[in-house]
Length: 286
Image (cartoon, rainbow, N blue to C red; front, side, top):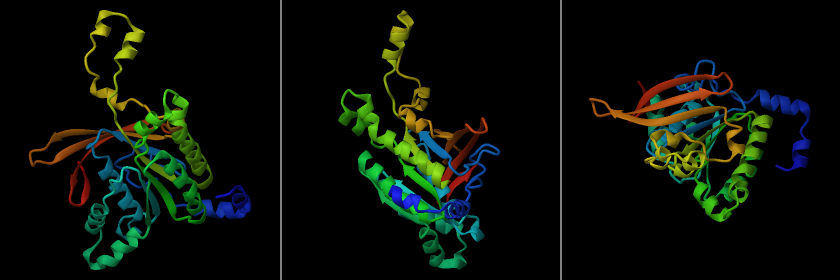
């Protein structure tokens, strides 16, 4: 949206629009620490290795967001920006159908899906342009409460290759996206949910630089905890208020895969751990 269009909005209009923005603080109390649900202007980061349950957790939250209030949802609108081209509409429909009474029929599913907007991006430049385009929706639709980015780290390696040896060029587009999101959070009070992929990097050189001891030189492969280390630009991490680390656990006796989440909230300085398995109806907390 242009600067002229934003400045044309009166203070009364701005107040009315922000007051109409749906709250997502109670979107899923089992995921967030007590009194640590996502407030307006928060950013929730889902971090973990591939297959750790991040996407299923996103579908769970999307369903909670767009389902009608009479069926346990928040009846809010959401935008999903799919950068991995992994969005499975049929899977989301299946989750919605299991949570809606059969008596409501397909119309209830269509009505819920009508509150979800999906965009696809194939580069960090396209992601930046898409976010600029979405500003008009955030400004004009008070019911639009959530922006889902799956994933915000999709173009990490491509940007590293295009940026050459310059870290500033490598991070340029994501840094611009983060600054734009920071303004959206402040001006429109949306909540951002974003996934980031865990990557394994070689920290041996860092260890050798900090210590010349033989034990440092003989260091083996990185430990599993290396997967939790931050690698995106500082501009992104500065706006994250909730961090959720996903791990894949053991298989139960009835052959169900268990996933674990450790969540933390910088606002309340609180943490929480929970476990879940995935069923035909979506996430089932244990």
